[in-house]
Length: 345
Image (tube, rainbow, N blue to C red; front, top):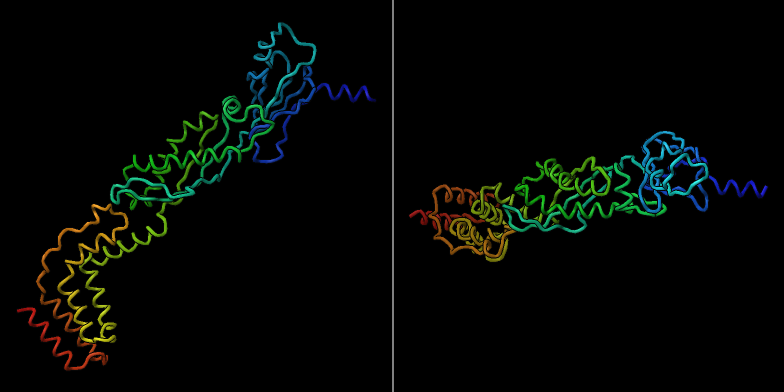
């Protein structure tokens, strides 16, 4: 019985891999002190490849199927071992199995904002994330560049390198695209295609095929996004002067309720009617979240624009509304109306 156990341990007649998990990409068949018999059976399942390694050199590669191991089915190994006829005694060789199944829904993203140069805003910091999929196509390249003589090699060991390389190319792709950040939301598919084309040579060097790479989101850090939203809001209201006048009109009721009453209203009217253009230049720099120091420096204020009849009439109407709400007295209203009419000359 002990002799039979010894014989079973020494000779291998069936070589196969059942793949216990979906994460392992390379697995070495356990040889120990055993040898492969002439005529042994090799089973390679769908989504697998098998490679024979002779003294560190990649020899024969097998795709899916069932094989009887002879000198005919092992031509490279036969050449390396200098077999000039059918081998009759068992031989030793390392056998590795590789999984060619597609690895899907692999996530990539920027752990920290990446600084890029934007044609509209200058230097900005952005975040991006998405998914990609790949599969193994060349077991020889994968073995020589990544898995080597390891007993097993998983996709988890590889993905850190892949993710970091993808993120490292984002700034280059963004700069080459010439698309402003503000337009990237409608160009994410094109951005993903350009990034995939940039990454494919690196995947091929590892014996992998990059099947897809998608960009799911591109965004600014929260503090920069808040500034950009404020700037967009100003533009939607018709520019800085219109925004300043709106803020002034909104502040009139509050000013009237505070100490100083009419003095507060007068200050608000002065800003709304006489200082709109002067404040526009100064506030533009503050509201531009990404302006360079040179761009933020406002030019010398221009002379105040003349007060238009429409502005005066609109202001008088607002003041009259405050009389109706009891915020202003009739006498105060008449005084302010007279001052406004004087501005028309």
